[in-house]
Length: 330
Image 1 (cartoon, rainbow, N blue to C red):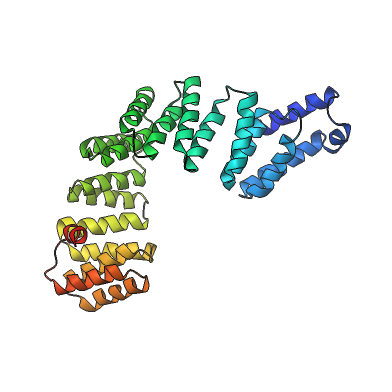
Image 2: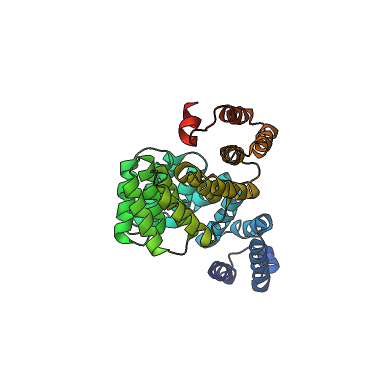
């Protein structure tokens, strides 16, 4: 491991120069350091971040700790969710190595995750100033203002610059598509997702995202095609089954098919009230009143009495309207 070897060499030089504490040097010779890092690697590989952090803390506390080991400790803290400790390590790095770009990038992401994207943006800008050709930094720099739902134009500009440098940056295409969706620029969003799929055609999640765009644009047939492709590629979580059922319900009026996919969504996520709500409607459309009533009882058990009352209203108002207009206007 590069980090382990670099730190061993640093400590070896320190000991050789006679500047290390003799007691520490005796306790942590080369062989012991090898063992210490082997344990840290093992703990990290098992996901036991706490013990890995303990081992790393022992090393960073010593004089002469290198940038890589401090950054490794910061990463371990971040994985644990110990953001103040991670920030402390990263600021220590910046104080000693002001051109160490990964520290600025990590600080940007930590501040965003902590709910302070303005601070994150400052660190992302500094990283970008140090390396303006780095597509990952451009992506991060563009993503931060997007996370606050404003500065779309600036975010889009940065992401397009990212793609000008690396046209195969899938994450940038996806984020641009999401920005476009928020601004109801569906055609542009579709184009970006198609570009992403051309780069990574085996990713079912990309087809799912494209399907949601087609669904929101009310192009039901294409939405169904995309959702089925996502499932065929292994993307089989509750959301894709729910969206597929919704597409059959809203655009094809095939309530039996809609019901089958809502059932699969309920199997994946039995606590989803909206799934049981749509199941109740699908059953009601097929005049399967006992089944619709059973789903209404599930809604009551989940505490969604508002949706349960909507099912009653639907049953009383048959023939039932399509979901979206009734749901949002009632």
